[in-house]
Length: 288
Ligand code: CCH
Image (cartoon, rainbow, N blue to C red):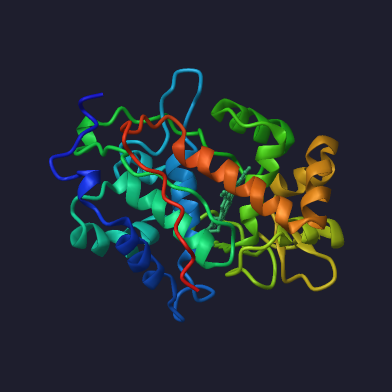
């Protein structure tokens, strides 16, 4: 709609190859988490997009609404200001890029530069310019990690995904970690949280997952070392037979996982977006 335009954003005036390179340069920082902002960039791109509902066609990355109250302050989005602040200098450097494009592109750059598949990406998402112009999507559209398969299906079916796509997307939990001061949960899913791999699936199947003994929210740790974690929602992918068949396929076949993840992630980042007809699809080459 016409509210979702900005005086500044003009997608045709941006050199996205340069933005890609500059985002890539922001990934590494030995003082942050496991040494990379990549995981939190992927989470930002996903939370910006995952509010979509196919029923009323509201939500999604369009508008860049995740930067405004109330969406920015929804519990599910705790900690994502870290990613937005890291990217802010690029909005200054490239004033014509929309926040909606910048946040989604950051997810693509992170996936690719951390060793994942090429993810085709299109520019042209308009921004909402003021919080007042935003018809905020209600809280509760993103998944609750404390729940199981039924809830996960409710959330992702609302976006228009099927079981196979849901499992593929969940594979992003090979990256990064949980933070007690963000979600309340704690720890990484595996030993290489800054590499995009199929390890979510191999770890799910290869380990025995036991309840973590602590005062925090209910979650699992691997029985052997206690170093790695699974959310209750992650464990649902092992226990639900329909999800599990894809977990087994992706654990065996990283190429299949990469191909399916790329397709599902493209779909996620484009939910509810009406692109300009002449917006090209970029397939950026990984820099490394
Ligand atoms: Fe996720 N995720 N996610 N997730 N997520 C968390 C962290 C990451 C759920 C819950 C959580 C996806 C699906 C789900 C990432 C990508 C994706 C955290 C910890 C919780 C809780 C946040 C914190 O404390 O920092 C649940 C529930 C679901 C589905 O049911 C999907 C889909 C994607 C992307 C395709 C990434 C990456 C992280 C790591 C972030 C970081 O900062 O390291």
